[in-house]
Image (cartoon, rainbow, N blue to C red; front, side, top):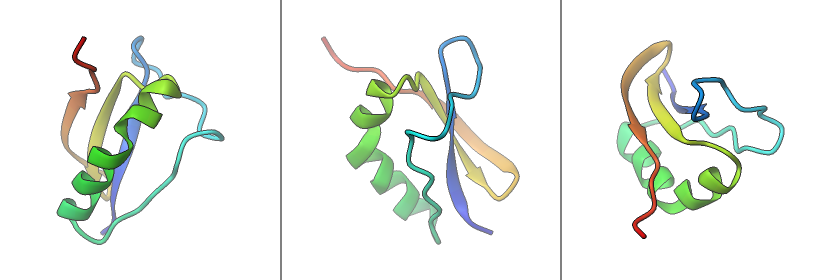
Length: 68
């Protein structure tokens, strides 16, 4: 199965996908590394939370927050 990120807006809705990257990864580590490099772009695109998916199974979800 491919590892992917599901994007979630603050209200729980899925944001429109046309402006957000749709990446698939062969390992959990690759997916997590990618998120570490791209989370700011996602927040600018309206993503509030992400869920790591292993195929159709949600592994975990977390908020994308900036330290102010």
